[in-house]
Image (cartoon, rainbow, N blue to C red; front, top):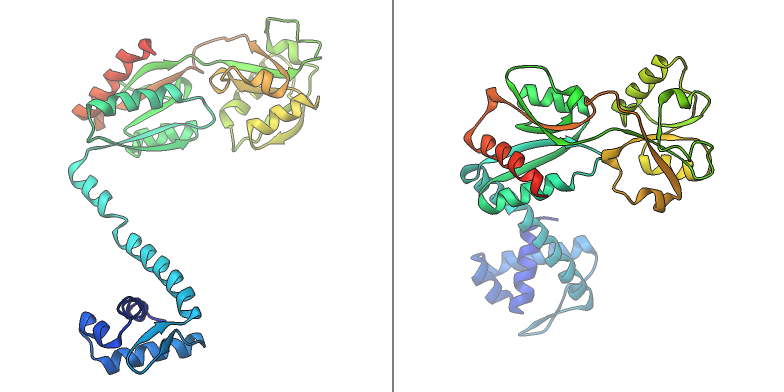
Length: 302
């Protein structure tokens, strides 16, 4: 079944005449009639009811016409799907931005929206990534700007960074936990607890930090199970299966009520878990620098 034959069929149906359709398609009437007959043989149905001087769609033809029109529209969309992108590539500057998955990045999107309102031609290419890949992508030029944990930002004179979001570790527990009365916890307080951990490939930053801090406080992490998403972990916490870790940057303030759990801050021994905006000066452009300075100026206003 050829695409040209489908177009011939639609034209014949629209003109209700092989003669008029052949004139419009610039092909001979015998050729057009033969192509439609071949299509009917292929489908095993008659698409047209032929009279001495007129033709009309059969019921099968009406059904087929609906489907063919849909197919041709999709083909046309495919043919032009990159027209806009090609235009953007030639006329619009693009900034490639990488950011952390699972964190509440609403402020980031709001700032980008405000910046774009004054620079309507700029286009943002957005991608979520792990902290390590964000760091590597910044160095390689895969990303122009990243929003990443400070501990993963390379210490280099070429890397410009600015505080974006305060972030620290928290612990989620069942509402009947013996630890619920505390306002803040230390890792030493958790030595007898059992945990639900995110799989390392899903959140290496939390797992590695938790394991190191537990070892630093003289005990190993006792994991009851591993989960792929924070949502799954918090659901298990609500069922009393253990405690789980999360970052304050992942907590939008609704999680306690949503899962009927208690979330308590863990003592923070530094600022290396805060989220920063960073770019590499070796890849700097005037537009990128303007965006970076815009983010710094406007953070306080949000």
